[in-house]
Amino acid sequence: MARVTALNVNGKKMTLDVDSTVSLLSVLRNDLGLTGSKYGCGEGQCGACTVLLDGQPTRSCITQVGRATGKQITTIEGLEKDGQLHPLQEAFIKADAMQCAYCTSGMIMSGAALLTKNPRPSRDEIISGMNGNICRCGTYQRIVEAIQIASGTAKEVAK
Image 1 (cartoon, rainbow, N blue to C red):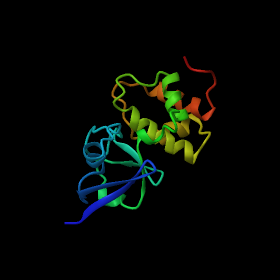
Image 2: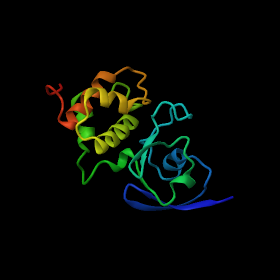
Image 3: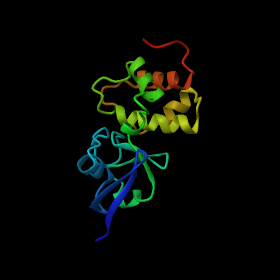
């Protein structure tokens, strides 16, 4: 059985020793202590576990850690820089875009990837780009608003 002994996570080389077939989510949470990504459905359908793999939103619950070897993994913990939240994290706070917050890290990671690809998306592009991330509390309007705030396309400033 192949082993993974190092990963590039949030700009740092992390050493470990795990079976390459274990889920990336399990390794992030259980072996590296990065608990921001959440286990939701375990089937890659809800988006709570979303991380960026070489900048692409990836469902870490169904991604074997061996597939992440040699790639840059960014988790919600990696968006903050020098004590400053990422603009999308700030926008989620400003728009009150979370209720229970279980989906929030996955939403922010998918939103960050969207904004990297398209810095000023239309409302329809935001909705399309966030398709597949589920918020069981139903704060979708505030999530869209947060992405609009972060992109500078909001018609008025949120709360």
